[in-house]
Length: 191
Image 1 (cartoon, rainbow, N blue to C red):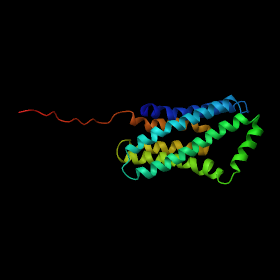
Image 2 (cartoon, helix red, strand yellow; image 1 turned 45 degrees about the vertical axis):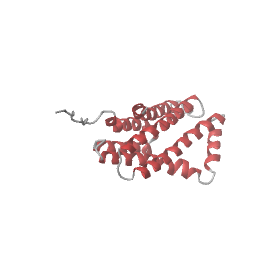
Image 3 (spheres, one colour; image 1 turned 180 degrees about the vertical axis):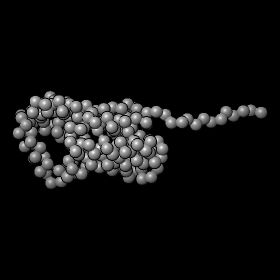
Image 4 (tube, rainbow, N blue to C red; image 1 turned 135 degrees about the vertical axis):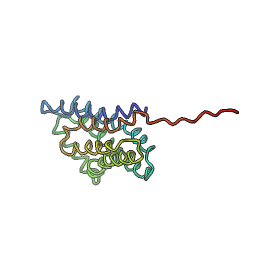
């Protein structure tokens, strides 16, 4: 599952981004099949990041529990966000009703910062930090954390860069697929 998640989680992010771009081509993105498909890809990707985070944690020697908890908390808020977007789109009849429903949710005190603003940032900052700490223990090369940083910054520039974000996260995690140097135990000889 772990090796699959290392590939599938970032590829699901890429699929979310591509589906979102295609859905927006006609100017009527959300609610509808394109919105739901994109958000299902996003939700699947976020769920698949749980084993990715736990894999990174195994390679961290400093602050592993704290950074893992913060990253998983951020991931949970992202899962809630994608889930809310899916449910609200099912209840909406058109784009205007979807916006109204979204505003009803985000107008609840604390929801906007926790679920839409700060929470997801914790996930992405946590990924970068975990990649850097994993590189520090030489389980990832130095460039993995730099690549991860670029990947998480791209959507802040433009959400249409999300497909590239997924591919860069995949590239950053790819060295975890290749086994490092194996240490062998010398054979015991009997005299």
